[in-house]
Length: 159
Image (cartoon, rainbow, N blue to C red; front, top):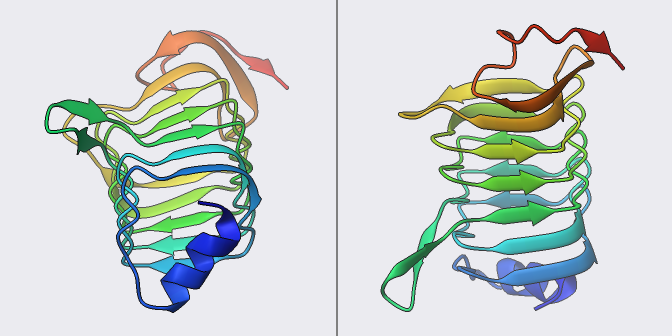
């Protein structure tokens, strides 16, 4: 499925897009509400300025056994708003998350690897903490290595 096909199906009323794979597509400024994207994989997708509301971006069962986490690889999520969504166990790799904003999201076990979080705002909850590897935190400080807490690090190298 490509981005154009996803939007056509969405406009036609479809809301279940579990485990889809989207690559090299532009979904900038898109508005999606009440969609199931659990287990989806996004590779080099432009979500710049998108607004996702009540969207399931969590893990899903695959073939009745293994859990498949939602993954974002090399995606542009700058200025994206994730509003009351389930991000449980979601994975962000090498993404631009500048001015990314979550509102009332379940962020249990969400992982961020080599992402830029400058200006990002996190509003949500979770049973287990988020995980961060080699990230630029919201205030512009580079945090090398792994941490559960962006602000307990002794690293203070401003980018």
